[in-house]
Length: 352
Image (cartoon, rainbow, N blue to C red):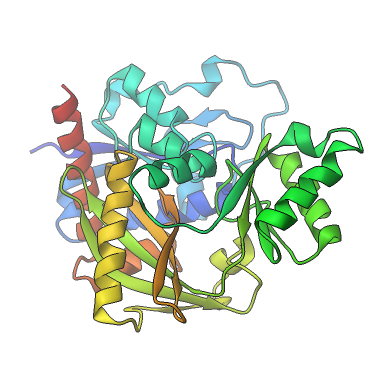
């Protein structure tokens, strides 16, 4: 029986390029374990930081080191795959913009090829924090208070910007968190505890995105739940993250030893049930498929559970919560990647 050829797509044009390579390495290992070894053949396809596609990128996958960008302008032809006919299903291991935001999913849809993970709608909504929060609000999921800010307001005349800061202070108070709407892995996020820090945080976030979200700070435990499935998704056990930084930033997230993970999280059973139910509800609210990780705040003093965000393609590195949650829930890594491919093929049949 011929092996299924899996197009492992990694790298990409986001700030999470190196993390994508690490995730792809882990998934490639998973596809070579136990029964997967005889079932799948990995076709590594790498996207350089300048957008150029590199076919059969075994060297990058083995070394884990990014390739240098081309010295020549990258043509349109270099930004498209050339081995579509040789791939049975695509496994996009791309984090952040230009990969996890619906753009790559749209390309797969146009090519009419199967792929792993969320579709165009879920990916786009899951990447845009403001659209995400609107979807959560529509189904009644409790959230922290937040405001939308546009780059044009931040870069406005000296009369408007102070009024904007006044409004944020009155509505949300301090501390608050300022985030670009469309970047993943805590890139560009800053905590503000006074007017000076707020102004600096808004200016920084505006340099990353034209749309910004400002959220009220909350004293809470940060917990996460993994989702696996299509129309009937399942929730994993709950994990908890603890760290010394002001928030779960990029360095803390992807540096071994920077954060402590408790799996399972020491939570009351009724709180676990609420989180699992709301995680599934959040996944369905954006029409998720395949996988997602849903992050929550648990306010221990009041017993409140507040949804933070959904990540439609969470990290698969050695320190990533998603595969660890499923391992603790009884699904080993090789079984997890196999199941994700099955779900991708299943969703393609449903759309036919």
